[in-house]
Length: 506
Image (cartoon, rainbow, N blue to C red):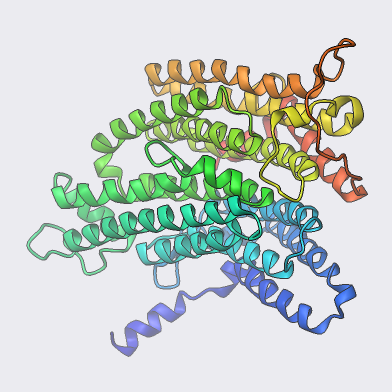
């Protein structure tokens, strides 16, 4: 590569375009420096500093008027490409990180473990997620995705005194490594096929998304490229927990610390769908005739598996994991519809936000109620919740109701938009399966609500459910956070117009 080429690449290095990611990296390192400089009695301030800085970054992203100046421009030599949807995902990941940091502060109070490193890794993963959805090159995609995965290897087993946590970390390490190998093998096949000079449209830049798209347009029947595409999609399917790559979810969700279970359920899932939308919209368009039927079958299997296996589940973290598989199926329904219905991508984004609000509300209640063991919280432990702590009971009911799709909560609108998109895309059989999935989910979601509300008032002589869980004091900021999540869930159910217009018009 000559100096002129390097000079041209250097001109595309617009660091101001990725200032949130740079700030997160600086903040992550800053937390470790503050841990060294601050006396030990001040260490409780460091996580709060992390949350406050992230709130500032979030406000900057929401109000950023100059961000659109970089939309559609290849940055850093073609590694990154920003657009309006990537801006939405950056806001999503920052909001998720703020909430995970809050849950981490609550959970770590019950543990005698290092604390600052927890928040450091959360910030690094968040920055990597934000870069992942801006990927315009397979090198960027793989590096960002592996940064996320390696960070989760550490966080999943962070409560190392718990055997279930160590088991979850080992399982996630083994299966995560396998998924990374599958993804990398797929990238290698695509690189080899697109770089073959004997084929039409071959290119030296075969890891660059636009160049690869041109090659696939000229060679849509290339067997090696098709195999590469299938392997790449398989690697991404592991991250979102889609069938048949979902087997790790129940054990990992149960063993991981509750804040990290929330991070996996919300942040990791959204990152997977963000890059999946990028690949389908900007890379694998010529192969949709092969890809869409496979995605449709995967969607149906994911919805049915998630809902059927959750029916008799009593452990709440495993239940959130299995129901999260079904939510991945609903989101896949929107992804399949987005190929022919452009506004369906906005519906996917709206559903992700509704799931963020509802799931984080439920995980917040679980984090406050969890014992130091953390992985043993059963549905029966929620008996007497509405009677003894009405506030937590109401927050739990709103979160679960939204995930179940009960009107007029935001989750109902999110499902409705995805179903309308599927109907317009003429995916009638998938729509029917999705409706069956919603009906099945009512059983286990309302079983949880029943335990919290109706098991509280048993007639005299009836045996009460075991309630070993203590009802802790909730701080003012904790109450404010949960109220914000619940109010946003209710308000979006009634007045979602401005948000849906903003998302769908992007």
